[in-house]
Length: 136
Image (tube, rainbow, N blue to C red):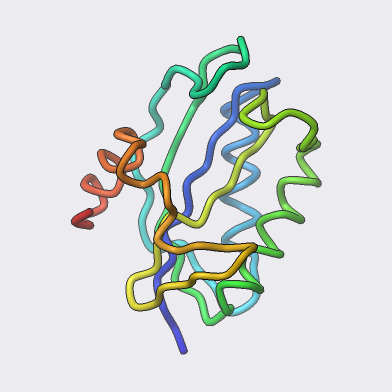
């Protein structure tokens, strides 16, 4: 089934603009998937207790036939290729890719919850979704 997934991209380590650009290219290259819309890029303060630099964030709408679990797996591969290390919760990241929501699917599994449970707390995600014409 084709559906539209809304993917949040974030980076606060290294060349943040280049990381987001490579992430968009990798998302567009996923099997049976294509980016159909992109929000503007915005800079935001980090969330959480770890002192770190500001993030660049963006939301993309990805039309895909990948299942939510398969999409999550692909996102984690893209993050790893960008040097993502999962050593500190809410720590600095070369690239962070989150499935924020799907247009027609919900998921409630131990490894994935969609819509993302932090959606209502991430005002920048809600702004970016609104820019893409999505109500939250």
